[in-house]
Image: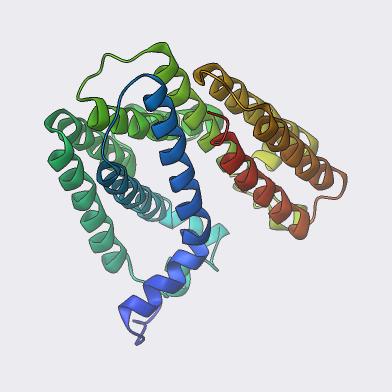
Length: 290
């Protein structure tokens, strides 16, 4: 058991986010989603003040941090064995500290949505409850845990639900046009694309727990899956847009294809990170299609 870290909590949490919740990537991607959401809704004649989009951005980041912490706590026993260099494992932050931060961010998430729209607040409470059930792996989630692909699809469903809650906050309704539904599918696919790219690892980074796509599909298989899911995201975003811009669509596919090919040909740590970087770039570009 690591001894308590004497450094100030704010400093330690800042270090934690650089390793496990990188704002340098999450803030731009969140802004990109807000932009494409605004563009799609504007095409449908739905207008909302920018302050609502700003509040949704803060709420979204709060929920993402909540889910990151939930994952850390849920997987602690596994990470103690297979990832001893992570912040919680080496004592940078304690389980109690992360728990408090996680619940605080869950509270921010619900409060902001409730202020924006009662329906959105109710749905956000349901999503938060779902994330807590996932934390303790109650019921079917315990059965799902060893089923790698199905488990990841179910966990990533939280990102789709998060986007739907944002639509509810902006439209005060659940009655949406096909374009909005297509946009939500694209955001879900982009979330999956980032997650897959993040788990395309170099051989020396793999563990016996096999918690990466590269350990399950090999380097070529995981690289191709990243490209395929990016294509799904680009295609559905084009379907959502009234007048899609093909330049960012082509650039998104090209960047991920280059990153995937480089990684597959020589799967080392540098090229794994390069693939992750091109996935983030494709995420940003895809949201510029509308």
